[in-house]
Image (cartoon, rainbow, N blue to C red; front, side, top):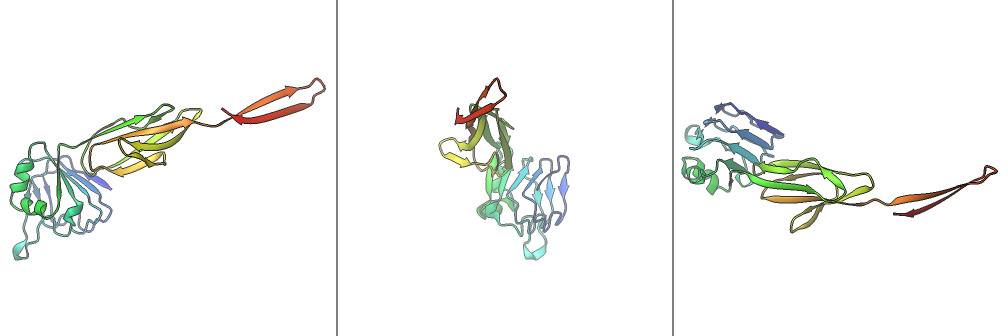
Length: 203
């Protein structure tokens, strides 16, 4: 599940606590995030933030709990504004997040999606947040069939027309199609009403 709060300024304490279906969250306007906001969000892999300097994260008493307590930091990619890497890595609390294994992605990742001869694709790509879950679909034209998705420099990655993947780096994908086998039917109609059908495979 992906959620986006375009105009929210603050995220309260434990707002998403134990939201085990949450995979991606976008908080472009947030300036403050409460303690344990994402506690036990086990599937969360992408957090997009739009502020520079970074949002304020809140400590909770002597226990040292903070906004990201309860997360496996090595699973998380923070998408931040272009040019704000230094500010995030050196801000209070945030510096510990990144030394703890969380990853930074500045400005998004480019994805290019194309269709080979014989079909179309549902999207041409664009710029997405690191860690985004992308779903694309290939549709063959009449007389063709879908063969596979192919990643540039890496060969086939999926034989399913609808392909879903987590975006971790710049990616170029091509939908590969081939001509579908056809059947040629020869029909002979005799004067006395006898019908002979000779079906042969071929192109």
